Image 1 (tube, rainbow, N blue to C red):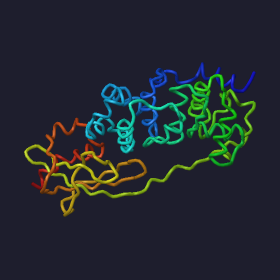
Image 2 (tube, helix red, strand yellow; image 1 turned 30 degrees about the vertical axis):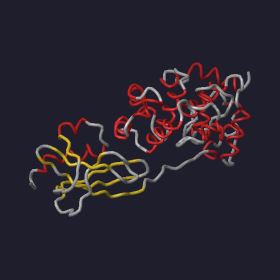
Image 3 (cartoon, rainbow, N blue to C red; image 1 turned 90 degrees about the vertical axis):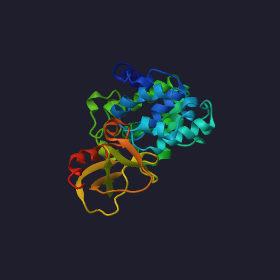
Image 4 (cartoon, rainbow, N blue to C red; image 1 turned 45 degrees about the horizontal axis):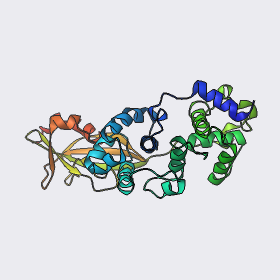
Length: 308
């Protein structure tokens, strides 16, 4: 039995067919899922994918959305630039092109995403290489070379009769079986795998160290409303955050928070602020689409009254 046939049979029985973005060939829906899945766990995307599509079912509806509406719906997924890039795409095209080169010209769509849309939405005979597929290919073919070599091998190995299923099967094999510590006994390709005796030789990525960052915020509540301001920096761009603390005198407390590549220590101060702020009802703020970092800071509300 051929290697790809064994792979496809395994996928038919063990693949993650229940994922909602695998039950559609709508290019826009698949595009949304691929952008959401970038550096975000599947479980988190499952919580956000369908509500997002209910709010923005087409590129046209995405184009009409304000940045605030869009980022509110994206809240919890992190890497907010991805959402803003999607809106830029919606402003450029009414439908996603089928051509990979044309796809890659659009904001936020790189080689992997372009190939994924071409394969999963348009069933084109093109390879797809994400981190899971790369791990499988490196071990199976005992490869230690460049990304270019991996993509070339993926193209050679691709089952041209069932390209979409083949790519999804490799993806699931890497996610479920050929993991950091591989479960080789469950792999349909085990007998032909050149790297099974030394899997860490061909894939061993250490845990990424987060960059440490300290943030100092002012918590100021007046008439049961909290002062917020739109972020102008690259982090949480366009989203509502607490104002930056200036005096840093009345410390309410601190907490840890991870955001993308950062390991953040947040310092919250009871500090009066002046200027143009967004005043949000405190009860509303607790349930609003605000960054998790802001909601964590609200736990210091009860201590705030000690200073004012």
